[in-house]
Image (cartoon, rainbow, N blue to C red; front, side):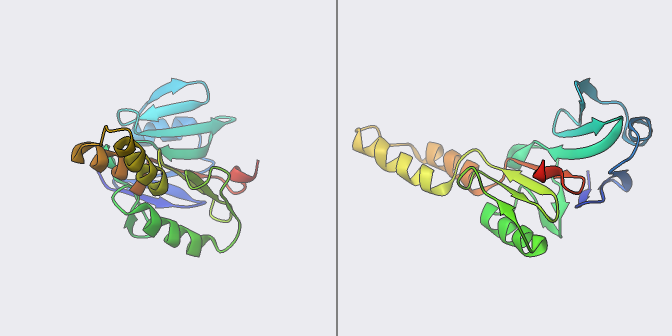
Length: 168
């Protein structure tokens, strides 16, 4: 499935656009009915969610991460395959303004482009975990280290919202 993200505008899924402000009924016609819970509707095995306000699209989030099936692209870079630091730099450049970092590297909100990213771990934390495990005589296996570094070096989710979404 080909998914392209256009901040502040839309997401294009295999040539079909889901635009901010689009009515829920139009989204359902375009991509089908999802699983609706509260104001959020889940699609594609819960790897994409759309939040509605007054039945209009206000936020779209990709939840599958590097191990998911969906592989959205933003600014010609794969959201989940790219190294977190590389995608951060591209988003920082495109945002050209306020970046909220209230979670010490776990998540960022790029206010001018209304994009948010989240990851489950940060590299420094994983490095400390490796040292701590070894100091207790229980060193981590190569597989455990690989798993933890993957969580730290790739984004787990990306959300895009209407203008001002992250300033609320």
